[in-house]
Length: 215
Image (cartoon, rainbow, N blue to C red; front, side):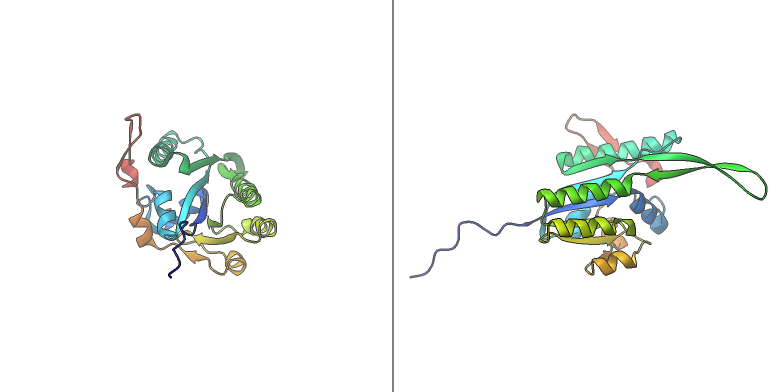
């Protein structure tokens, strides 16, 4: 007599990907200019962890400040992601802060914009999700070593959760790699495979088109 197979297949690993938008943007820009910015983050998560069930991608960014055209491109991109993936993509906004700098030699002044709150938002969300048991695995798309304390805390709270990092192009962190030895760089061919269609239609029928500067 043979045993009957189990009627319940093994559950897939639930994965949440946490994307440091600032770190990713600058890595993509350094690698290929603007050609990779129209990136499908959910598709990328599925390609990076093909055996996992990607339950959410959480994208941490900040609205562009004092540059209307750049803000328009960013808004189009975020709307395209939401239109295509709905509740699977969560946009978490921080902010930019303007600071006036003065040259000590000549006295000339200029304005610098600093991104604020992204690393804190990622850290708080990662720890909260670990505490709630929201995922079995977490993938951090960042090379920001400031996230190391959050990784340690999440592991203490939930020792069963697997956490690793995927480094954006041109970005590395020895500290994160030491903390998470399974960390790896995201290669350009994988990014090219994960671009959004040039036009993304929302359920309402509204179409979001890839910005000309991002082609």
